[in-house]
Length: 415
Image (cartoon, rainbow, N blue to C red; front, side, top):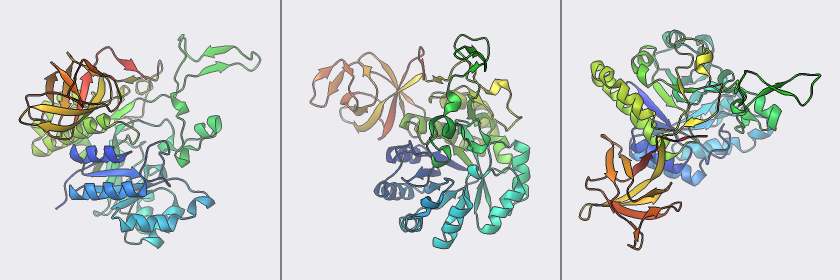
């Protein structure tokens, strides 16, 4: 019997895939080196993809592969062979937007489950039914839909067709991500995964007869980020998402850190499970869930289109910075119960005297104060300044491996 809700996590690398799995995802979506819309992500080699699928399946987690570019003629070269390889290593579904790519999938790997990407502009149930009649198993709704519109789509689809919707992460200012600004300004094709995110840039106005005079769009000495959407966060709306008929809760972020993936996945896992156990428990813990998910790097939050069409309150006009109050300090690779020493692979500097948090896969995070610290050879050190430096320090509470080490920094607001 399948779960009532699927938590679908991003995995831009093999490391992130493993953290998504360990921290509570039911499924992950990844990109290979071809046909996906995150060309700047690390993405997966074919061997990494195979290893990731084996790891996920061993933990009962499914893996979906993005093939959602809008293809040109040359993109079809080698596509059939690629899909056959994905089938051979056990990929559970392909995420597709282009009808031509869809047709190649159906012809080449007819037993492969196909999900229709949000890029395909799935804004109504007639479009959804069209794809279902072609053999699609899942529709990823357009981000422009309200709760009511998602519910209408659900109610007009066959029971065995799933709806998947984004519930957390960056929002695109363009219609379902179909943007040409990057192509025009930088010659980087957003629909081939190379978006330069010009929507996050600072803009001013130049009047035709006054070249060189740059006037702010608003009266602000820093200029105005007129396209800069806030990040989606629906963790307080789990009941409404379920009632709308959404089966798969999708988190955006294939270019994020392991800290982001682990933090957001765990927060949503706990929120979903609390609601399914007892809605009263969920209501009582809503502030806690929001507080936890806010520990991941993010822009100010919005509910996107779910409650109403976005207003000026859903954009950030004064800056394009992230709220990043927690540093990704490291990954805990080992714990010795006899000596109570943790072994950490450093990701950002921390020092003796720091108070840190250990984000464990299950249960509340652990707090640890570093009294003393040692390098790999056992020498006493005052700080860990070097990337991927191996260090050890004492933690009296048993730490599951791997776990995430994070450090709070209230003063931090960076890009």
